[in-house]
Length: 139
Image 1 (cartoon, one colour):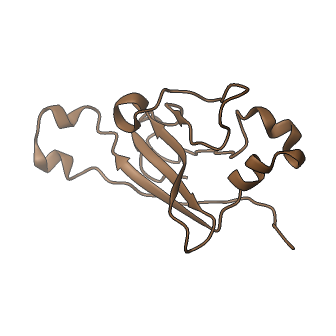
Image 2 (cartoon, one colour; image 1 turned 90 degrees about the horizontal axis):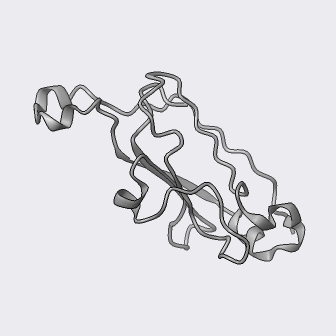
């Protein structure tokens, strides 16, 4: 939950172990194509690679000004989610040991157009709460 307005653009990254590189998990932006080079999409079509990050403009509005939630489900919009137990690709996709959130662009009511640095210094990110749900991957 954001204590401040939600960012205009931000990303979630994951890695499967501390030795692995960070890989994109989900992108959020009002300008997906310009910011991350991806179309604004909530789903993957059958036959496409399901283990790739999507970008959505959902949750990128400046409203609400406080207490805006973001709900990310790593399986949502992926065709094999309904057959998860038989999809090795998705089982690997949901596996993460570390999560990183990259806050890339503030929502500023358009104040950046005026270039007033004092006004822009008044904007901030503030995350009040993060909840990560998962299931244990046990041997």
